[in-house]
Length: 247
Image (cartoon, rainbow, N blue to C red; front, side, top):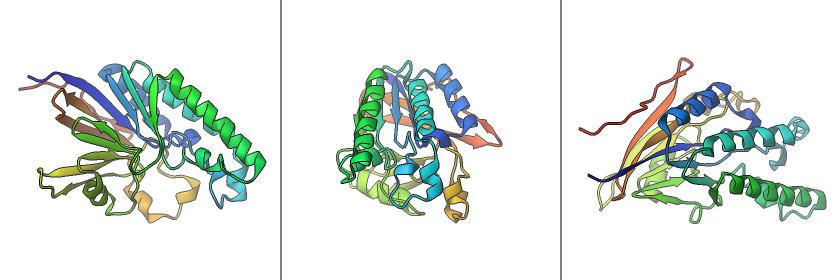
């Protein structure tokens, strides 16, 4: 029988917009499940202050609160992992984009922020990938992990057609779609989010009705095959298997 390694994939806590119940449940799950492979699939920080077209209210929010909350989750998530990966999301990537700004103050802040992120990732003994449709893909056996590049109700199928068997965040929704493939059927799965479902920016967005606080986990075998599970918040509680048996 192939040897199995436990893995967990979580995403989209968005700095100080994290959901406290999800963070507490994820922390407890990690202590019980003890996954060897830990993948954070991006948007550890919100950086709404750096969003193009940010409102005056968004610009007034504390970047330090956002930073401290994102760092705390990363440290907690990666603590105890034997192989750690951090895939930058589109919100994290704002630092790298503004590092090329023509405005000196913004450029200097972004470059300093990049150094801080890189230092945290090093301390967590994690490898970091950029937010890039080609270079931001983590291959985990026969499974690919990405932050996500499509949105909307067809996001799962579009990701599946592009990446085959894959897990993604980005949309904040738990979703799945099978796709046709000459090498056999593939499935793309949206893993949900670790942030608040209701945030100021999405108060009138109907799309948020599809959002779930959730994460994925499973076992990866040495031949590249895997078994996948997902847990999500149900009436304020999360239900997950601590032990996985083979029959």
